[in-house]
Amino acid sequence: MTKSQKIEHTWDTIKKAYPKKTLVFSDGSPDSQIMIVGEAPGKDEEKQGKPFVGRAGRLLNATLEALGWQRSDFYVSNIVKYRPQDQYGKTLTPTPEEIEKFRPELEKEIAIINPELIVVLGRIAMTGLGIEGTMSQNHGQVIEKNGRKILVVYHPAAILRNPNWGHKFRKGLAKIKELL
Ligand code: URA
Image 1 (spheres, helix red, strand yellow):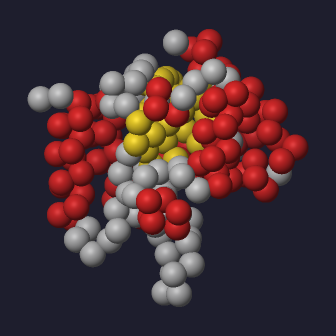
Image 2 (cartoon, rainbow, N blue to C red):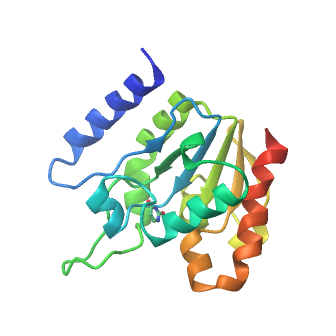
């Protein structure tokens, strides 16, 4: 079985577990050495069925392009595969319980892709992968966890809120080059 087929199989399991949810799975190349992991899809992602396609995603793409990559060079996914929302449809941050529920499938996904490097975007994805500490301590650092190299980078949505952190974001992502 190819990696794509194995990944599709994982999605089938998730679809069965969440028949009523609009699910958003991964994008990019399952054969990439680099896996980018975010927290959960937002409204734009839910509409288009792909991770990181809204404003934060566009900033991520533009920064990767400025560093000489195409987004399709990466495998891009989220921990939680649906948009967490309240009863009024407002997007919420995934709860620790939601992250826990998706952890076994995320671990399978990581095992299938078997990336040289995982890039986690933001605090939620960082803690979801079991990394302790704050974002300001860990941003731009590579942390070894369960035999995997994990680079911690700010979430692009945080850069949209604090545009003066743009250079730090770019520097964090630029570390990918040093790590392969
Ligand atoms: N934020 C995320 O963490 N993931 C997405 O797919 C979009 C925004």
